[in-house]
Image (cartoon, rainbow, N blue to C red):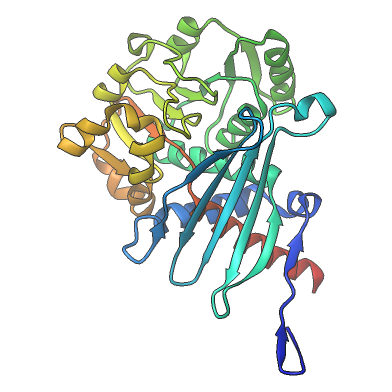
Length: 326
């Protein structure tokens, strides 16, 4: 910050996509996201309603998610540009903006496409570590896009994953995912959906679906199910019957019932006939939850993605960036 003729000039710290990718680590992401999910349950934290929008072409979409805590304020702009793959660019991109709260200007801008994939999968892995059976070792992943690989890689940080069943409409991309997962030392195979659900200890859905991907009767007792794809009204990956029969968790209840998977039973949650708990409550006191957990219950985690995750990860990246320049 510099002064010239009574005018204060404030420069914005910009961290590029390449730099944020270099700086992020699994331990950093896990700790930042854990703190964010716990902060989401604090009374002095506010997560504002998400803005869902589109570009000039309606197939090109972006969202704006924002939040504030006593120490942080900012937002994340996430975009999905459908034609980018045809020109060799990622379809998903992300930009995190942090405010200098003393003057209301942007303090830092962080390109975070790769980081966004890491932070999303870190949230699911943290929930899995709290909710999934300790001996869970078989994963079924619905979807074979970019996020699917990160979900499996993050789960491998918290469980001894031995096998992954990939369920996807695109056989070529499914084969590519299986090949990438083999580099993690995990056996990965393409499997039909009913068989894949029946074999799974953990089921993850990472698709843009607007209809259930499987039947609730295919899911075994004690399975952990994470739904990631519902991030707008009308999206759906899980059967309503499964939600009604399961213990329900999410990153942010107010968002989950509006645009997440829980939108499909929002009336029941509002009426109190279905109970939805923020995962931050469990992460704050994991021992207390483990002592009373029903190992045979199906546990569903709805991860619609919250701005606090981005703000806390951005802060960790800024600290790492400063350290690397020291």
